Length: 267
Image (cartoon, rainbow, N blue to C red; front, side):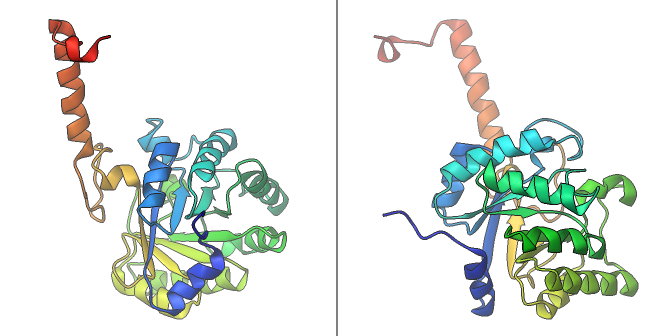
């Protein structure tokens, strides 16, 4: 019997009942299956794939075609978690009709259950248009990586009273326009906690402290696979990268020396 799928409604119930929400990224079938079986509630097919999978310096080079490809794989392999497709840069910013068409591709072609897009109150009309067409939307405020050039880097947001209030107001506006959940990234813990207390939708933090309704990390970060840099908010639960490097090194040495394959590994 297939496990019961997590839905936008069940996430809202989790918040109401004080149950924390666990969210991780995945871009391939094997990772999606393992995360799903571990009991994660949400799998985000993030545009972070640009950095941890494709080797780009930031998330901006990702295209709709690439995101549809990765999202379809994850949606096919995850049986319980809600699968959210991350809308890439310039796939939703031009006008609401463009955003709706691209969001529809995530649902129809990639079989995602929802989409995520970045931005505050400026995205209200776009979000409303997508939601009214029957597509669940997850918002994303605070540090929005697609605006890295605007921010001048991956800098903390909401550090002044004015910025904090603007974030709270943005959260309210996005809720009023139909989002089912909200990612809050790299903001002071007290600000994120105030946002979570202010809105009824689940608030998923990343570098936003323990006061959020749930947490999200990039899987490659928490596994110790992506080593180019390590944000303060990343806890490494394993050192998979080091183990992989050691295994590859040993394999090459054994092949070069003729130690592998031996009789045990030959027909």
